[in-house]
Structure formats: structure tokens, C-alpha cells
Image (cartoon, rainbow, N blue to C red; front, side, top):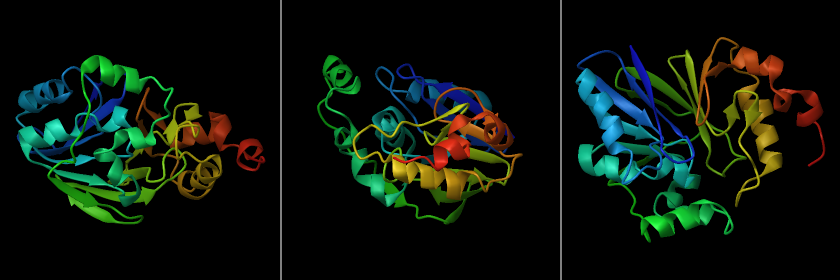
Length: 229
């Protein structure tokens, strides 16, 4: 199996690349922001292992996770999977961003004024299982960071957690359309029931496990989960 990560130039977003082995199909997760995009760096990994991309998995609609989706589609012609509640933000990423946040000035500096949805967008609802590149992915709707945030269990071995769960932390709920109440429900009902052995592949920062976070992450403890919003 091949599992590699390409870290985006801006905001350090992890783009995970999954393949069953050399000379096989692959899928990528959350291609983020770079100049002109992240496709070249991802392509280096693809070429090194002689892989054939067939899909992009998007955990949520924030631009630091979707910036290079369209460019990747243009080069490789892949399907793009996302929850329907965040789909609109593929073409309208500013709809999820706070006006005083860091991304709008960055886009101005880069001269970017508009975005397009990739050609083949496929919506994933909670509980949907899909087979991609030899892997079984089960989608779990995990709102809070954004309305359509989704985590993916891969082969009952990995959890692609996006910005829901990090090592020792969680994604913020203060961006536009974020919800602290929804995040707490997600952590209680989606994250905590997962197997301790699952390896967590977050949207930012290092890998971890569900067991480690259950023990060490303050946001998975009752004092946070049962506190008033």
C-alpha cells in the first residue's frame, strides 16, 4: 500500500494520496492552496509510483481544502466526492469564509476572482460506502466545522478526519456557518464510537489514533462535550 501526504504551501493542509501499490489507481484527499496550485506536487508523487488518479475526496468546503480541486480535475479528469451541504462552496468558497479572515487578501494578492466546480461532482450522504482504487470508504457526516463536513473510514484502518479532529484538538467552529453545538454532537456520536486502533489522518498536523485522542484530547472529554454552548 502507498499512503503519502503533500502539504500545501498555505495553511499547511494535508493532501493525502492513497494507492494499493505501485502502478495502480489512486485517490487524493483535499488538495489545498499553492501557487499556482498543488497539482504539480501531487503529480510528482503520482509519477514516482506510476499511479492513475481516479477520484478526489473533499472533507469539507473550506478553500484551504478545495483550492486545487478544479485544477486537478482539469489535468486528470477525476470524479470529485463531497457532501451535498458543502457542494456549493466548490464554486463559491467565499460563502464559508469570514470577511476578516486571511484567505480573501491572499486571493487578491494571487489575482483570483472566481472559481469553477469540477466537471464530475458526486455527492456523498451519511453512511454511504464507496469502492475507490481498491479501498472501501465509508462516509460519516460530521458537521460543526462546516455544515457538510464529512469524515471517511478507509478499510476499517484509517480515519480521514479533515478539520473535525486533530492531534490534541478539533477544527474551529467560529468560521461562517460553523456550529459548536453541531461539533459536540459530531464528537459524541461520530468520533467517540470509533475503534481506538483507527489511524487518524487529519487535515492539518501529524497523524494520531482514536485511542490517543480519546485519552489526551480535551475536546473529547465530558467537561467539554457536556458544557453549555
